[in-house]
Image (tube, rainbow over all chains, first blue to last red; front, side, top):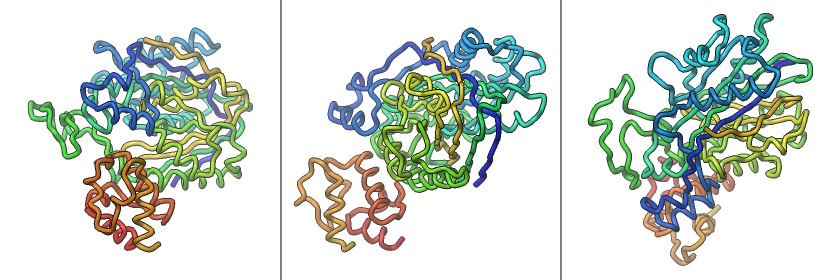
Length: 350
Length: 75
């Protein structure tokens, strides 16, 4: 486990954009019984999600979010020294979307850009990269984008993901400033669980073919092809509840804080059952848990910044925020930071 | 925890299935109420009661409540 401490770096602005198209869970009666749907909503919290239009991509959502930051805060395009784009649904296999966004946003030619393939823990991983780059004297502002259009990667007839996953694009700007004080990170990787969350087909190992696109019925009754995402929900849950509460405890001990001292929790919106269990096991206060899953579902790595935006009215200046997420791999992590004077902008639609 | 206590605790994770449907030899995946969400609640119950981790594969490889009890006790 990597435990890391930083000083005087923090979130300066956060924005999020969701597609305009609403898909209500209760509308999926073609594939699921009403009883099945009600049980699902009761356990996960997902009432509805947003699905992107066919001709749009995750980078379009992030582009709109970035423009909002330039339009509504004092951050200028020329201020951005680095841009990290975290996604599992890139525009193209080549080139990376970060390169496209540098040009589309009109950022400086000296901007350092990276595409990062991380799953639901992507925002915490992206923040950590930004914090590390900001150790350098000449790097002052880093843009961390997380964009996912998982609606393009799911089968609605998949019992694990068909009612769960949704789309969003988020942007955070991380900057230097004494107002941010100390921040803490814990990052862990246990890569022996890759089959728990995976898209097997369409990559280099199993190239796209008529076979990978053929819809198949699986043991649990799900219908999907090999180029659509598999989430083995019970394995993810079992692993998550065994490691995440401990990771939170370790980070808080490292930071010299108790969970009672933390103002808000922005945890990955995996599903309510899992998130609530983790809060309970970490001996947290459920009233401090921010939520967005009801309206947007599980939006993978975008869910933490989306949650901040969705709950912007509940977040106060100088609130301490505990973030926690687990994603494919498994890769997981926890972060504790001070929201300071972060500009959390109003949610947009595309 | 004895196996009878485990069967009772197991049954408490179900909302609609009558308690008399649960016995040591019950093939739990054949119960009408069994599904992915009840699987999560059984994993959580074992975590809470035993502080042990059972995986999705452990559940898939168990047929009866007794199988699951023995697996938990062996961990």
